[in-house]
Length: 423
Image 1 (cartoon, rainbow, N blue to C red):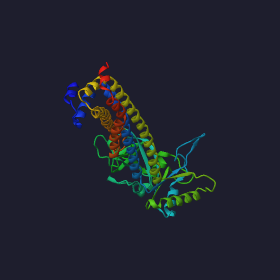
Image 2: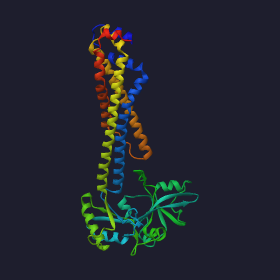
Image 3: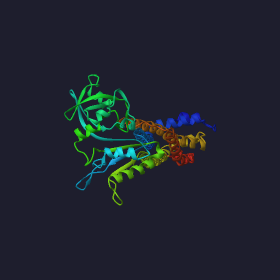
Image 4: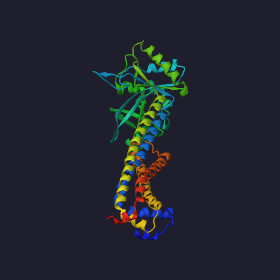
C-alpha cells in the first residue's frame, strides 16, 4: 500500500481508476472483514430480487391457470356437506344436478355454453402399471368450455353418453405413465376400480400450470361416472360437483351470474332469507383478488428486505469507522507525503461503495439463482423484471454512499501529526 501512497505524492488529483485501485487493494488485504461487511447487503438485495421474482412468477402462473380455465367462465359449485359440526369442501354435497345445468343452458340468455361434471381421483391400472389419476365424468360440452382438443382418436359421443358406455379419453401424461411399452393406447383397455374402460382418444398437451398437470387427467361419460364410480345421485337426476357456464365475453359475466342464481334458487325452492345451497365463483374476481394479495405480500417482504439493507448499511458504516481507527497511522503517512483531504475522502467513500456494489451484484446473482430454483421446484413461471435489478444496484450504491460518508469524513479530517504518533 505504501508504494502507491508515495507514488501519488504531491497535490496531483487522483483519477477515478487510481482511487478504485487503491480502494480495491485496501479491501483485498482484509478479505474476511470485507466479506462479512458485504453479507448484510447480499442478504438484503438477494431477498428483494428473489421475493419479487417469486411473487411475480406465482402471480403469472396463477393468472395463466385461471386464463386456461377461461376468464369468461363462471363455476357453480354444489353446497358443502357437513360431518357433525365440520363443514366439508365445496362440491361435497349433492345439491347440483345435470338437470340444473340443462335448465341454465335453456333459460339463461347470457350463458353461451354450459357443462357439468363429476370429479374423483381414482387408481387406474394397465398391465403392470398403475397410477392415481383425476377422473372427470363429463358431458359433451366439456371440451368446448375447457378448450380441450383431441390429438388422436375421438371424444365420446351422445350415444356413448346416453348408454353409459365404458370408454375413456386420456391425457398425454396418463399415456406416458401407463403405456411405458410404447403401445398405441387407442383400443386398449384400462381398469378403473376393477372395471375395464376402452381408450378411445388422447388429448392434446395442455402442460402444467400452477403446479397442476392438465395432461394427467382421464375423461369418461358423466352417466358412466355417476352410475359406476361415484355410486350416489341426488334425489332427482344425476348429481354433479360443478357446473361450468361460459358467457359470450367477460362483460356478460355479471348478467350471467345474476340469471343462473335466480334459476337455481327457483329450481331448488330457495327463498329469502334462506342461504343458497350452491356457490358461484367468477374467474375474473379470482384473478383480481389473487393479484391484490400477491401484491401486498410482495410489498411486505420487500419492506422487510429493505430493513435488511439498512442493517447492512449500518454494518458497513461500523466496519468503516473501525477501519479508520485501525488505519490512523497509514492515513497520517499519506497526508505527510501530500495526500489531500479529497483524496482521503474519496478513497474511503470508494471502499464503502465498492463493498456495497459488489455485495449488491452478488446479491442480485444469488437472488436470481434462488428464484430460478424455486420456480423449478414449485413449477411456476420464472420471471425476473429489469426494474428489480436496477433498483437492486441503485440501492446498493446508495447504501454504500450513505454508509461511507461519516467514516470518510473522519478519516479525511485526521491531523497528520496526531495520526503519525498513533500506534
